Length: 468
Image (cartoon, rainbow, N blue to C red; front, side, top):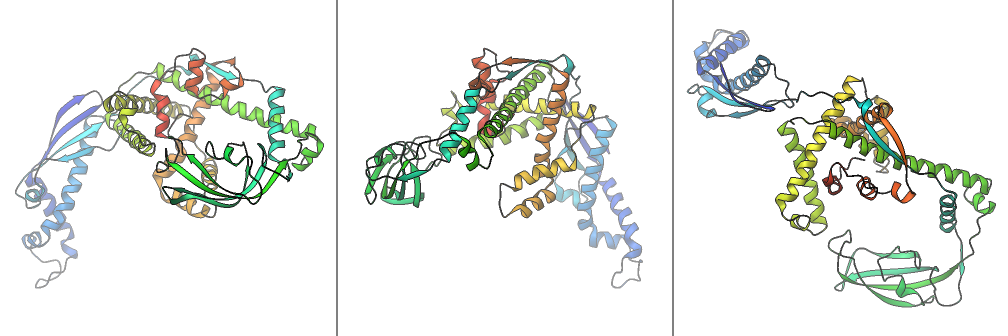
């Protein structure tokens, strides 16, 4: 066997490997001699069939397995002899004609390509300086949330007359485009509060002034960004029948409201709402902190990345982007000056994700951060709850699909490492208003005059893998 290095560039190595036909023939002979005592051939005593006869009879069939074994062994030998740390299993490209190799008429020649894990120094996370956006829960925010609860639970009384804004009407409707009904455009006994914005613009306004028993054709135009592409920017007609018109009863924020919601008093209701709002603020604050920690880590680490790893990440992102653009009825050129420019932006995102993934993995490994089985089970249970009635199938899917299980594990591990870094880093709180706190991290950074570390990450939401 001859192993020759043919490429040595950054994190990629390539080797030309030649295994002589004579070596393969010897492997075949040794395999047959090993199996011979257990082989019974017609016309020969047990174990006495000539090796030449067995080669002729079973050689081609057995040679396929021998070649596969030889490729695997020699590839691993190349890795071992050169002290390589592969990022992926070596990729093999055959250079020989397999028919000739199997027939013993040609040497086995192939190229082994190996992407290496980068060797890099981790930054001292205790020296990272990051800001944590925070915002206190104001009493007016509590009052606003309580009022929304009151509006959601308000009662209605029958109105004797025409429907007005904020009235609740009970309707049947059937929607059609170009005279044909469309899926999801039909309902009976639907309760609609006029002015709530539940329906597309223009629908509710045209029902103001209707009375119980009225029938009305409501003409509207679906928005250009409507989630269902087949309906986007289309004119539609809804045949509406009004069955009932109810006026809203006065809203009263008092102990009765709290008791309607299962609590003993308005004071308890206010306390519960405030605690919930504090939890919402904490989650939003952590989201900003996580992004800023990842930005800081990215800024502190510069090293070559395994090409195959980057391309695999980019391919996954790009497929998701194209699918999202198709749903929106757009082309790549609608998002950038050219498709190549857009690809470059998403390739930068792929590189960032791979780099951060390697850094977080190394940090987790060096600091003994692990994922307990119950953490995985809780995450799967949360996913299963999204599919009522199919919970058992969801659990079975993850138990039998290692890749899907890895996708569950990855964000848990990432969050634990980020929390570990947050405990060590130099974190300073930066008070902001509520609006800023609940902004997208990139938008908040732009508003506050902080330069986002990766501008394309804002676009990466199309890839459905935002760092949140």
